[in-house]
Length: 98
Image (cartoon, rainbow, N blue to C red):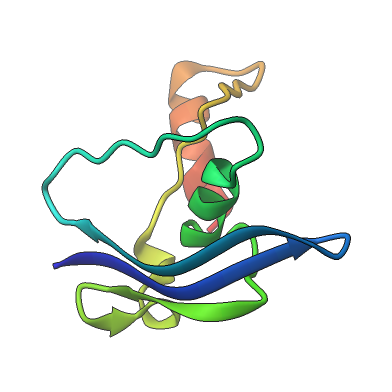
C-alpha cells in the first residue's frame, strides 16, 4: 500500500507553502521528491514524520489513519546531527525521544 496524502496544506505567515491534493507514495519503491528551493519538499517530509502539523488534510499509511500508527515511524533528516557521545548513544538517541 504505502503512504497517501489527501488535501494536505501548510501555511507559514499567511503564505501557503504546501498544497498537496492527492499523493500516494508506494511501499517498497524508491521515490524521489524533486523541486526547487522553497517548494515544500522538507515541509512535506516533516508533516509525514509528524514534526509539523498541517492546517488541513489527512495522511493514510497502509490503510490506517496516520494518528494511529505515527508512534512506529522514524524520520531521518537530510542534515546530520551527532551528539558528543558514543556511536551507540547517537544511534539510540531517537528511541529516547519517542
